[in-house]
Length: 344
Image (cartoon, rainbow, N blue to C red; front, side):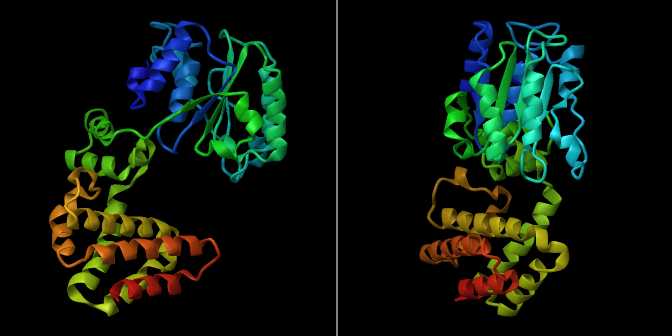
């Protein structure tokens, strides 16, 4: 049932209406930020057609068919040949196409075209979910367009994308688009606390960190996050309280250590969020937009030593650094320069 999914009530209303009226389009585009639940909604819609015990046209999510539809065995990341085909769940009428090395292979889309023309094995229709559809190249896009132009009556294609504008306009024009909004922090917090049994303080922090993306909240390693945040908090303390440039260089060295190189941009994100929280506290803005709610006491101490203009300048410097990272910038030099600029 759609009620088990978190957020996006208007989308639930639309999908229920389509199911009750038996007017589910052959092509749907589920568009919205990563982690807001687009694929879950697409799969739940498909399960309504295979469910053994539907209620008000919705899937029960408990019968054998619903459980089979949930189970996908994805191939190993280096198994290119496996990504050339539609990957079916344990139910033979629900399949998915997923990217290989950041690209959807044209062979997979051609296989989708073939499979879409087969009659359903068990259900009243077949369903194909194309994950990260914006990662189709021109050949794959044109192959999909051919299928969308003459869609088989008993098949439905659901495109899932966080960058719908990257799709060919001709593909978008042949799909009914469902636009997903970020999920309210309160809904994510309630879900984490009540359904996933997170500790209240962890649920509150993850809900604020998520930016409305349930997938991000569920996928965040809080222990690792708090360790990285402690390092970034030390940067701010070294600048605003201790005025210790040596400590800044030490942290910069640690960030660029070989074992930490993959976390560079994550730590930059954390630093940016901490600075934004300082700006919020400094300007007595709405406390509900504070992300690091568990650090409010520390943030108040730091904010008392930071001028709003200085904080705004720091945020601008971080944005400039982000842009420069696209040009293979030496990260060690870049982070040291950033810290020195922040220290003034």
